[in-house]
Image 1 (tube, rainbow, N blue to C red):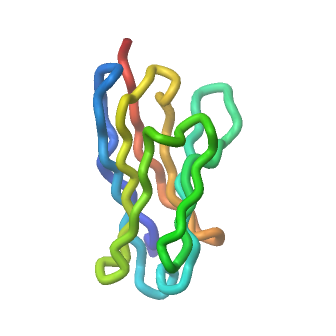
Image 2 (cartoon, rainbow, N blue to C red):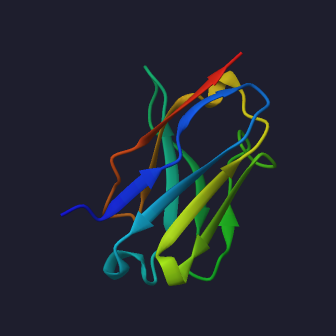
Length: 111
């Protein structure tokens, strides 16, 4: 049973924008701190955004000011709005509830 489903990845030119979505089943979304991670080829999985149940957010320096995470509790969905994308943002992006993971969505940023 699939519980986290990401979408919205694709190919974009450097400087462009993308919005990723992650729809969760209600039972794992309610009250959960949600996170977006990314994994580039040959690299470890990296945390890129966190959002608490009340909407508080955290970003690492590498994406702060360019990425914005939000959540729609009525739709059990989190979003990752990415601006000013760089080639180094190329990766597979995953959302997680802490115990569950999606299958990932690929983002490729061309220079």
